[in-house]
Length: 113
Length: 114
Image (tube, rainbow over all chains, first blue to last red; front, side, top):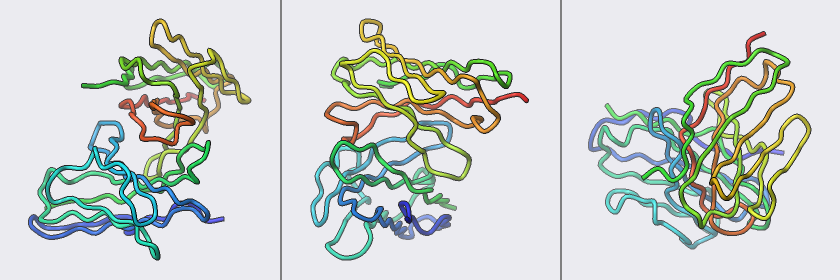
């Protein structure tokens, strides 16, 4: 009964490189959410996706960030040309979409050097 | 603009006593509230929730109270156990059942003293 799986757990990138974060939702869950936690802060909503559709991306920075949840495979959060301010823990959550709280993965900690 | 506020960054409680964690919100559109617990290097784990049509929800040692007029909710843990030591996040949503996007507070680190 695997939970939400995120990889990698830790990712180090130099400024200007690309970061790709992966998330496999729980079995049977078709709704995926990405959240970001900056140091000493709470989690901030970024984007909500269903299979092949972005439902709500109101929390995504307008540039450099993109997310997808293809028909097959994990959801991907992609950050292009990373900057030091992108250093944070990125959490993925999933739900079956009906009357159920979000289940979170253990996160990917991104460090930009 | 912090719409969900947890004003106590940390709290220490003796084992066996009651732990009370507080949360205030400013957005009157919020109609579903949740508490999540987080251990270091792990993701948040859902603990308990309450809909705005209720003022109390209980699950074992955990009870959440909601005061809509004061825009305040609290989580009571009794009796507190060492395994309860974690960071607790209050979260709120507009929309049904809490599976819409959540607005989180900044968390309260609870330490249970044996």
